[in-house]
Length: 166
Image 1: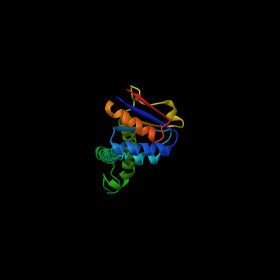
Image 2 (image 1 turned 60 degrees about the vertical axis):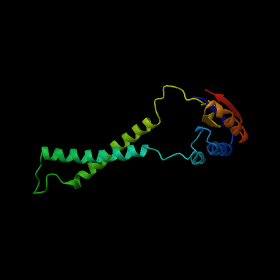
Image 3 (image 1 turned 90 degrees about the vertical axis):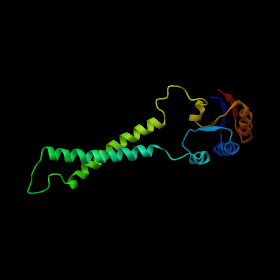
Image 4 (image 1 turned 60 degrees about the horizontal axis):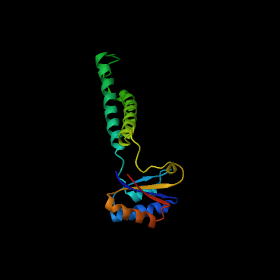
């Protein structure tokens, strides 16, 4: 992976650099920030997180399993009380809800780990420890012939440091 890394002290400079890079279609952009910032998300135009699908599917499977296990147990070991139905959905709603929350939460964490690619066995290219403290980093993955254009754009928009990396 070859590319250009730019370090910025100001958030606005990083946002304008990202917008310029996207306009010129130089390459794939990755941003490193000390804290999540909605300005950077809007500039990148990131799609919605796929983790919510894991939560929805896990919740639906959990409520289904919760109802199923409760009804199966009451049919397998019936407790006849005053002519009431043996398997009624009303009292099993609490159990279904609790299993939905459990399985939905676990599947959300699993989806987060899968989509974040954790554990990552190799270091990410372009990361600098100062991006965890106060600076913003913009990594542009681009072919060598577009690297000079990306470097010029980053410098033009106020990058404190720009370096080519592989």
